[in-house]
Image (tube, rainbow, N blue to C red; front, side, top):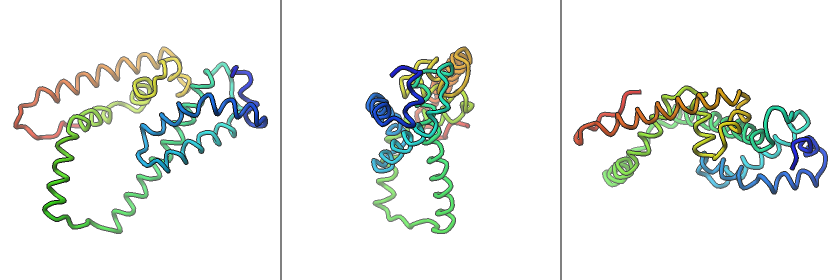
Length: 192
C-alpha cells in the first residue's frame, strides 16, 4: 500500500482489507512478544486495527511509512493494556493477600526461578534504560524495525532514534557484563 492511500483505510473496506492482510502477521508477532495469553493477544491485535481505522484520516506520510505508523499504534494499545492489567493486579493483591504454598510448590517455583535467571538479568537491564531508549531498542531488536521506522513509530527524528539505540546497546552490554562478573556463589540481585 502506498502511503497516500492509507487514509482510505477508514472508509474503504477493500483498502482496509489489503492493509490488514499486509500487516496482520507483523502486528500479531509484536503483540505476542509482549502478551502471554493468546486470547488477549488476539483481542489486542484487533484493537490495533480498530485504532488504525480511527487514526487513518489523520495519517501524514511525512511522519513515516505506514508500517512504522501502525507499530506506533500497536505500541500504544499494548502499553495501555499492560498499564491497566498492572493496576488490576495491584488492586487484586491488596484484596486477596497471599496464597499459602506447600513445600512442593516452593520447590517447583525455585526451579523455575533458577532456570530463568539470565532472562531476569536482561529484563532488569532493560528496566534501567530510560523509556525513550528502551522503546527504540525494543522496536529495533524485538520487532525488527529499522531505527528510522522506530523513529517514525515513536514520533522522533531518525538521528534521535539512532543515538538512543546506541546508548541502549552500550548500557545493556555494560549491565550484562557486570552480571556475568559476579562470583558463582553470589546470589545477590543486581542493583537497579
